[in-house]
Length: 586
Image 1 (cartoon, one colour):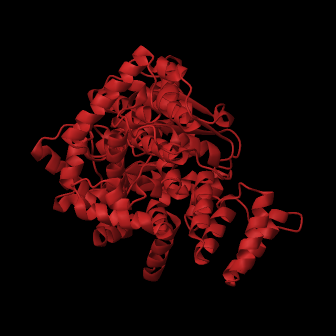
Image 2: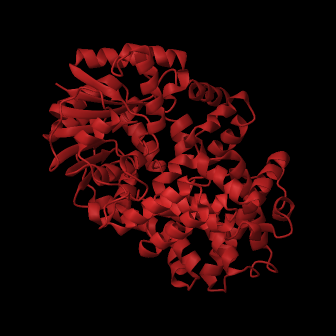
């Protein structure tokens, strides 16, 4: 699901990999239970031995990889631990929701990266060389680190210090590529790292800061590549990779010439990301149905934003998610809430209103038993991205279409569940749009919504005022400049928000063409006026447990919105992401 909509689905899987202790006929479960027991008893050698035995039988057991990484780290075997942590992340990409913890683990397992991180922080905005921050080994010190490589290829880097270290490394690679005497002198594992960094730059849509001189050098390198492709001249392997760190390769005038050449596997995979996959998305544009017209002025402006910057640019589909009935999902989330079960585990019809680039409908199709989804969005670019990312096993469960929520009443369909998380606050009248969606919801149907909080968005509101005062535009260049300027002001706390770290996400966060914010009292009044039942606010499991304890200690009901308002008033960051809530129609 997109970054406004996501609530890590780790809580739905019994484990990272879906394995627990089982009866004797389940040898994997038995081995896992034995290894975990040894781990709890601090018998690390025995735990490592059993986890490794399990992984010989089931190499894709994510939790075993993760736990083995923990054991090996405790034994001081840092390099081996990193391999298993990276494997767990590959198998369960949704673990990247815990980015801060992963970054901390990276620094612990590779102290050289931690030291480089600190050196760059001290020198910024000056750009030291790779050797100055990493020692004589230079970039080789980073190449081959399993966790870092996995992070670069799989998720947006959401740490300012690490971003700046990578910005410095990118500049060193640019200089290497510009020097004819050094551009061919790299080992295979270093080339692999170069390609991983180029993938990261594409994922974050080239949000890293650049100097004026650096931009000129990158332009010259791009021109060199274009000339070589046009003339058929030999091309050093570092040349297209370095260019891909500053420009998407599909923006070159002759991508066919690029694809016709033979390249090492790492570069060919980079071409998949930056050339072949974007071409595939363009081919989908004519196949996506236009379900409603888009005539509203605000809808048209929002559509244009997401045509230019589909949101978000995500990489891997979640792994190890186990199917669950939606009634059980809600009972797990809200054990004391009173709601009427749908009783449906087949033909559960879901409308995802504002599906973005597809994470949300794909997650729902993976998660809910019997789910069949209509996923609509204003932006064809976003829908094409979503269609490309949808696994073959889910294509018959998800129908994509371009549509405006304001016109959805005309489609003549109704749904058991409507999901409009992170969408309605980008419309001219959030409550009018909510009422339209209620007309599509069957009696007793469930609705999941996400709204910005007036209190929770205080830092963002201040940053938006700063942007308006300084007159920043919303082009990629202006977004890059604005980010760096913000970091030098008291508003730097906005960088604590995950959406600060890519161009499309930063535009959505700070430059959106339409944003409104609600309060709990206004949500409460709408729920009462429309005869809805409030089921609860959705949080990650640790936060939810804390609120349960707080409400229990005060004798409050978790469905009392007045009490929630009191909590938010006392703790304004409670809903700094969004109000994520479930309601039921009478």
